[in-house]
Length: 245
Image (cartoon, rainbow, N blue to C red):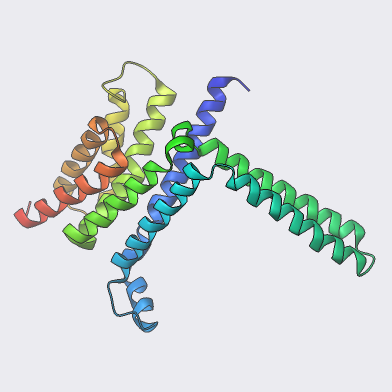
């Protein structure tokens, strides 16, 4: 596989993971989430508490990645040894040799596939400085929720899930002259894609177009769009709601 194809494949996997994780941030905003928390006896703001805990978790994992880079290999080694001991014990209980070997091979393949995916989506700077993008995304969503409420936050999260992946992938695959980070086609396409997503969610057409254009511009000029895109989009959505536009 050529370097360019490998790079494109890694970027595609990274952006698909980005979309999945971004959309998961919408879960605490759903009505049933708060209802479940209330029925479980939680009296606080379930969404706010969840985002705060996610931020702490992201900071903790990022710190481990930087300060203990060998931790993953240690966990992997311990896991394999524990699995080997358990499977050896199962083998000794009866004529299950072939079945146990098949299970062991399947687990090995799953483990190798998982870490291959991690290696494909993990950027070089994340190995040195931690998961800055994830921390910024969760911090931005937390700030959006605290400042502008759930509706504006949902629009900011949707911008995070749509604008960056569309712009980045189209720039990678189409090439061409760039304006800052992206080519003009990818900027326009990301704005239209986000506007379409907002329209599908019930947004008014004019507001959807304004938010789409603003979000693509924020993503284009920002050095860390995971921080600025959700918060900036949420802020504009909040202001548009106040103005009645």
